[in-house]
Amino acid sequence: MRVEKIYLFYMISGFLLGSILFAYEVPRIWKHIDIREVSEDGNPGTFNAFLFGGVGCGVLVLLLELLKGFLPVYYCSMRAGRDSLLFSGVLAAPVLGHAFSIFHRGKGGKGIAVSFGVLLGLFPWWMPALVLAGFYIFFSLVVPVKSHLKRSVVTFGCFCMTSFFTGWEGAVRLGILIISLVVVYKHVESALAAENTDGKKWRTQ
Image (cartoon, rainbow, N blue to C red; front, side, top):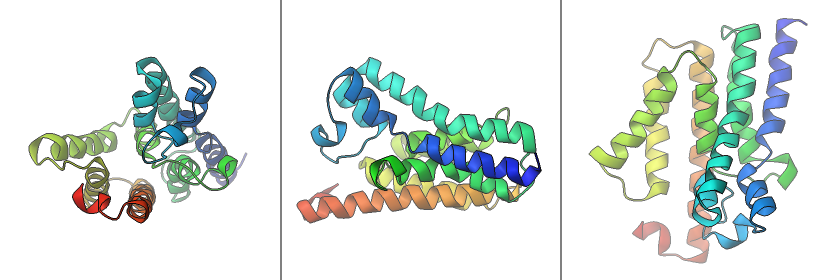
């Protein structure tokens, strides 16, 4: 198989795998609840799976969300490498699938857990995942941003900008840019939707 076809295969498979919203499917099957209906923000995400499904349900969802980002990136990296800019599409595909799921009419989650899974897929290179985690810790403990929504926007914004001042491969930096734009967009979309239902909610977070 030509290298370009390998990248394309993992882009498509990553998008399809990303489109499986485990934070919706696992609570529905295990707890018989629709996470989008019972949660305040309607987000089929890992946090809501923990909150409404319990620890066991949340842990399973977290592992599955990490894996769906990890697997296509890891295997593509092993088979074709990270040199081509096409690899940026492999990085972004699971997050795009999660955010705009073809199995849920283009609707999806915010993409935080799957983003970590994608970065972990760069194994044994841990630095991008550690940098993203470091920003979350920084804005949670050192300079606390109380709103989880705003904290995620600031975190991914800083992560994206920082990546362009590193010596990381161009495909990785481009992939991080796409991922960050998607995550920020989904959070802003969620904020605007919340503001439409409660005009004061976004401003008081």
